Every structure is written in C-alpha cells, then in structure tokens.
Image 1 (tube, rainbow, N blue to C red):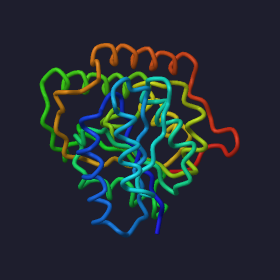
Image 2 (image 1 turned 45 degrees about the vertical axis):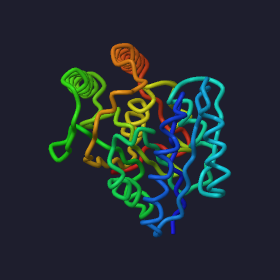
Image 3 (image 1 turned 180 degrees about the vertical axis):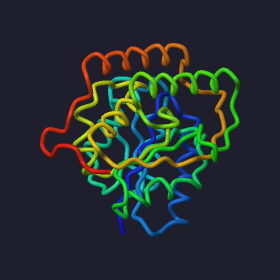
Image 4 (image 1 turned 60 degrees about the horizontal axis):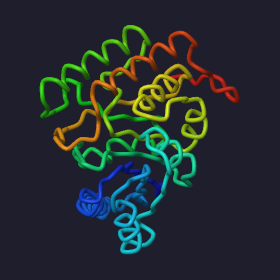
Length: 246
C-alpha cells in the first residue's frame, strides 16, 4: 500500500474548501488500496481560508494536514509541500476540482507501481473532454505549441492543475526548478523530460471554473519569460545520478 499526499494549493478559498475537501476524502474512502492524505497549502490568504483549513484538519485528524506559506505562488506551495512530504507519491489538484476526481487513480497508480516517475493531466489530448471558453482554449493551445516548438517539451498540456510524482523524483527535480508561480508546472515537466524521467499523460474530463484566481494574460506572459530563460540558459541536470533511460 502506497502513501499518497494530495496537495491543494489555495489562496482565499474559504468557501470552496468545505465543499472540495469532503469530496476528495469521499474519493479516498472509495479507494482503500492506498493510504491517502489531503494537504491544504495556504498561500498567504487574507480571508478565513487558514481558519477553515485548520477546522477541517481537526475534524479529519490524520487525513487532512495544513501548511501555511506566507507568500503567494502555486509553485512555492507545491515546492514546500512536496519537498516536506514523507509520502511515497505526491500529487496536487486545484481546489475547484475542475478535473474529474475519477482520474486520480490513473494519475497516481502507475507511480505507486513504479511504472513512471511523473504523471500529468491533459485537457488537450484527443481523448480528453473539456468544457471551457474559447479564450482559455486558444491561449492553452497556443502556449503548448510554443512550449513544444521552442522548448522541445513533448506534452499536449503543461498547465493542467493535476499532477503527481514519486518522492524520489520530487527530491531530485524540484530543487532544479526556479519558478515559484504558474510556470512551475511547465518547468518541472521540462526538467523531468530532459533528465530522462518517465512521464505519462492522463487524459481528463475538465470543467472550467468561472471563479478562477488565474489572470490568464499575465500568466501567459510570465510563462513566455520562463521559456525564454530556459532556452537561453539551458535545462539543469540532476547532478547526483545523470539521465534515466525511458
């Protein structure tokens, strides 16, 4: 039985957490093949998010944990949560549960079985089912095209908030990732790919959340800067072990 930490990064999500966390725990109950835990990573929320998180932690002792990070940024939330996790597999999902929870086993099982090192949800695979507006769809596809063309990242979707990796991969790869915001996902996948880690895509069902905290244009601009940084400086290598074979 593998131990799995599922991180939910949050910023001002006092209303979403009391709905999302019980739904995730119910999924865990239906899948006893692993030992699961929810980790709420609070990125310096200014509302009652931390108070609500602590209440959930107390209510579900041992099944819910809370980490408070005094600065904003999805990347730093994942960096902090994953590098301090004792679990065999670390994963994350967005608090709005836009990605159907039914795909969680497909995300983590291959890692728990030792078949792959990193897995990631994709909304742009031919087998995926998505419901979102034209603007977000266009920007996502344009961004992936740029990632593939300029950075050479061989994925169909880099920014879906649904990823997992082994503890060993996290310890080796995350220290090489410089970004602490939204580009963290793309940079992590590129670093993993270029160091020969085994990646697997998971086509998902995904529903757009109209109450998203993501500023699409700013995020896209920051992502382009990140791509240029990696293109100019190169992708760092895992010093202690060299590249793995696929």
